[in-house]
Length: 598
Image (cartoon, rainbow, N blue to C red; front, side, top):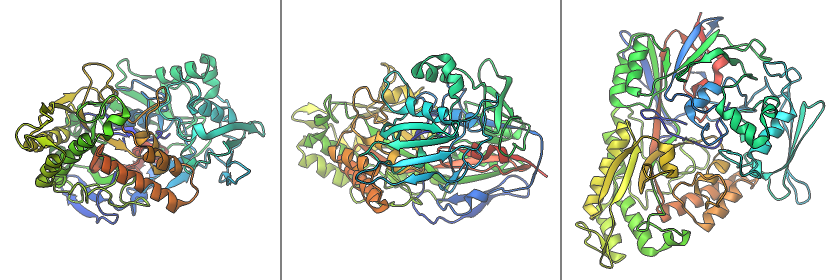
């Protein structure tokens, strides 16, 4: 059901799953649209109050709903680096269950269909390790009749604990801290024992997207089977939905899921939920108006929002959630850093990075783009948590003013020894090279962001060439000559687990380990603070760890947070219990409750 860590906002015109809010923890709710002649909707802002009950309704049994995703499904294992994508997870949320399910207000709810009673937690001491004991429901089973048991938990741990370099795990965080996973009571009791010195504060983030170990074992060892599960549509389900026989179209643009008749929990209301891929987000309102689809989840842009408002019989909502937009630098670039981690600490290079971020008018960007359709949007000033999550504080604006400060930026460069400030920037007689800045093709707001950034840099004497990328994932990993960047704008889709979620993003990359630290940022103190946040039992201490890390990243000028990326959901108003979940799990978190209103 869930997506581990953060996922990237990969879509061309919509957000994804890499996971943030607006400026106030108590944003107001205001109505918009025309309920009498068109759609009805609201801009909820950053307040999480009431999100779990939006569109609650009594629904009838039966019916088919077609939901929009924005990528054709090319990977089926949500726990691999390729499968860890928001749109893919929308399909598998109803098939592969989670132990804890993130709710729209960021709270966590135990999946009581799967787990009987709250897990028993033994707190770590100087002599005893942390332990978690789960009791699986006696009747929990896969759709082929095989029981859901400890073997499924053991398989997930083996695949994600980082000991096998051949396993393509999207994240090892938390799993690498586990010493053993043992089954008892005919496999219905699972005891997870952590390593003596490695308790894990975000243990509720573990055991998401439970995979069928009995199917996996038919396809080789852990590495081979993990890959097989990624390449093949699920043949069994332990959730309320299952892929229909022959339900995957040849081009993978249509996935038909039907009610799982063997589901051990409360049955889904709908007979069928079909997922249709529309890769051009500008076509989504048309498909909704024509009845080709019943719901869409696009990135809101002014024209798209206005078109949705005009559609009769449609409800829509705009929120700020856990998706946040940011500008990142590639610290392997020799002007910004270099081939060795120590290169990025050279004072003149730090000054260049700081000047670039100081000059940029983030508030002006917001006013020209997102605020055109979301008046609640505000500049984001923290990378680790967002407003509405514990520990949020502003660690950015004192150094990088929200409206930018061009004069201050020029002073920084001059003091660091740069010449040609404002015309043709150079250091020690050597021109600062032109930088290549990338955005996702088709994303107008990101294109605007890049153009505004380039215009600002020109005023510092820096040339920034703006280019789109057809594949954000390949570009972030710089997999080939056509997919490289010096500067890039993209989004993370956060989870409700900031302590462990941030560690892979900002921790110094180690060769051979899975890495989400795409810009090669390295700071030993940040490594230490983020490691402590994953094990420290004290909430206040963990919040301090995150904020110290965030303040250091600000000082080091690796990434510049821009704003919480608005989420938008629109659906036919005859649908009940369909709502936005602006966490990494998305709207299909409660797919079994969806239905046609009575």
